[in-house]
Amino acid sequence: MDQLNCSGVFEAVRIRQSGFSSRVCFEDFVARYKPVLTRPQQKSINEAKASGKPFSEVVAMMLKDLPEALNQVGEYTEGDMCLGKSKVFCRVRAHTLLDKARDMSLVGYVLIFSESGE
Image (cartoon, rainbow, N blue to C red; front, side, top):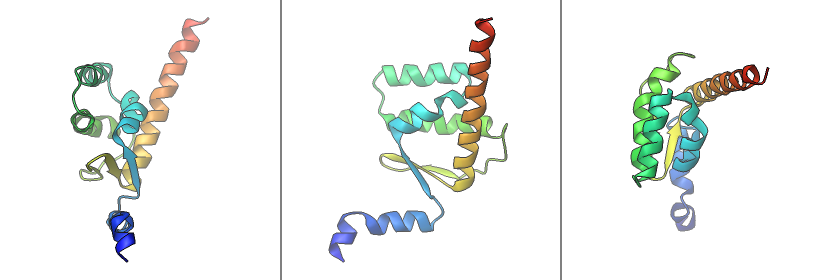
């Protein structure tokens, strides 16, 4: 029992039971979902990373800006994402919106590149 507790299994079960089925480390979250933000917001994130701010602060900046972007592809509910010590925890609804918004933003980039090649 102590081994399960020390290895974090019980904590992972508790988090999943509270509805946060997805967890992404800070660095991966920033890399994967930064395209969802507007260009000025992306620039702000890049500057924060370059200045050496801890990733927890960079992700907190993103979480502040993400509801605006996510409401364009669906209905984001406050509290569907939260910050842990090293990971972002997302409920299924928020994770789905993030992926949908990311897909749409990447399609936009592809269209820009394909138009410039003609």
